Length: 173
Image 1 (tube, rainbow, N blue to C red):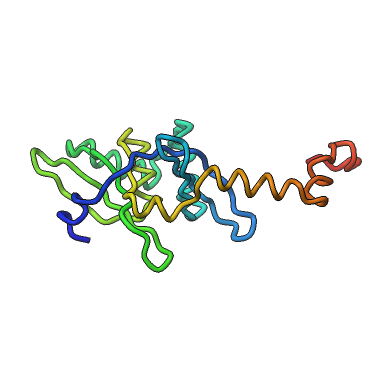
Image 2 (tube, rainbow, N blue to C red):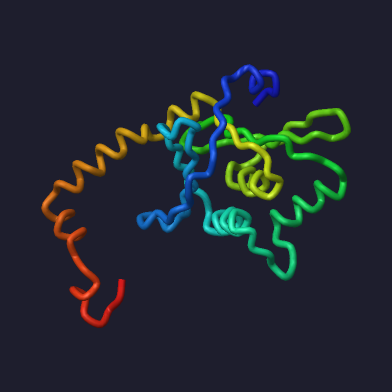
């Protein structure tokens, strides 16, 4: 992706709304939410990358630096600032991202996986953006809530949500 092309796109700031485990794929899904709280972008990532993001969000320190911690330490030691992260595109069901680094007075753009870019952004407290076209690939949160509401009217879904812990005997949920 050309840097100039990237600069001309409309950027939307997003925040990490949460991390969930997809029970069908056993992959972590990072959920990015737009500022109005109306659009949600799910990005499937690896378990290790999900753990790296979760550790950074929870400010968990490890005895020795892990990969994203090491990279962040290298950047700060070399006085390189991560100014922002942009989830730039979705192509053939694969998300792409860019790291924007400030070295002296020069801005350098580096291609990255969104999971690595987000893990670094959390550590560097750098803003995360999505292009408008990428965010359109996500879920409309109101439509998602309606879908869940319709699902909850299903008799099986109602029965499942009505279960109590004691219904399972000695097996705890």
